[in-house]
Structures are given as C-alpha cells and as structure tokens.
Length: 115
Image 1 (cartoon, rainbow, N blue to C red):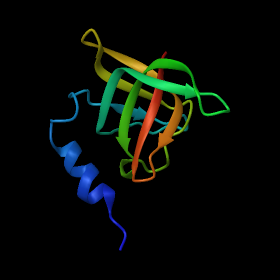
Image 2: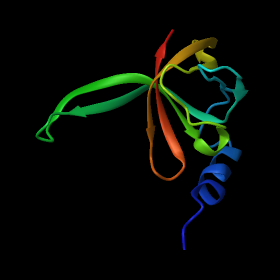
Image 3: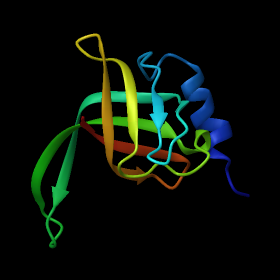
Image 4: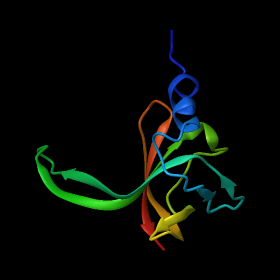
C-alpha cells in the first residue's frame, strides 16, 4: 500500500505554523499565471557539493523555499520566480528558481537566487 505523503504528512505540516514563517510566497512560473503557495523559507540554507569520488568538495549557502508539489498545476522549474514576503530584513524580495530538488515524496526544495 502506497503512502499518500502529501495528505498524511506534508499538508498537515504546512497547516500548522510550527515549521515555517508566514512568508506568503507567490509563485510566478516563467510561462505566466502567478499563484500563492505554502512554503518553508530559509534565508541561508547550507548545502554540500561532493566530488566525483563522493568526498565533500565545497559547501554553499543559498536561500531555499521548501514546497508541496501538490500545490503546483505544473512542476516548478528553473527560471520561475517567487515573491517572498518579509524575506530580507522584513522587506519583500523576489527570487529566481535556480534548481528544483524533489524528494520523491511530494516535497521539493527550490534553490533560489535573489533577483
């Protein structure tokens, strides 16, 4: 029996205010048609890049938005943008999606770059 991760885990998690700030993201696909999403925003997510031998090579720091993929009419994609309210020192900011990293359970980490 397959687990409906979005129904049983992701949606209830986002319904609470325990895991994220109230940043009210507005997602803007490059093809047009903006819409609001729920998400967990991290201003300085630390990622690790490994070399071909599997050894840690460098670490990176980038803003990231974690999202439920069930909210998207089409999968999020590189070059889409997202408006995050109160993102930087309480001010709204627009970010470009530079990478989409789905986890295989209905959640994705959107690696962002400030525009």
